[in-house]
Length: 178
Image (cartoon, rainbow, N blue to C red; front, side):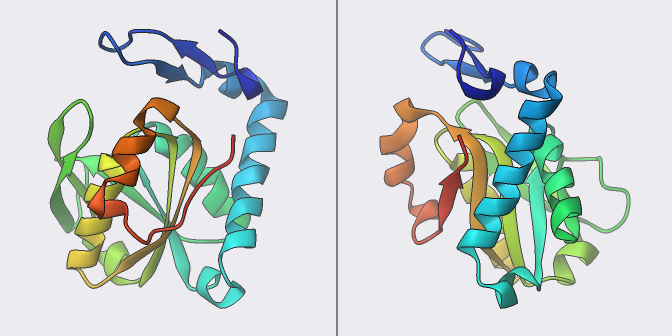
């Protein structure tokens, strides 16, 4: 089934009962990719006060989050903090636990970049249960920092109740652009 901006829904992938959102059609169509990057930028600018935005940094998880987080950081002129799986950050990694709908793993981010900023805008491709976002938000908060906004390309409607009951997402502005 074809969705807006070249997104395709793949039923029962990666496991039965889960519908995977394939972003390859969007990425393969430059006008779609350009349009969604502009929508990310517009959504952020329209949601955050200018004084908060001026002091924020983009934080994004690998791997699909990088695809959107990097060009948005570039367009907004903001620093970019990458969230990687354990063993990928060579300088001063800050290790934390990530739980999502499929697994639990150790994630890490550069502790020096994290320390240099107080406010973060979380960017990722798909919002499912919100567990990855909640894990990152908790890890950032443990260092006295704050995720002030989360923006996703789209969200999986079937997980809306799980997101709404996720205490780790309470009081966090969350936006989807498609």
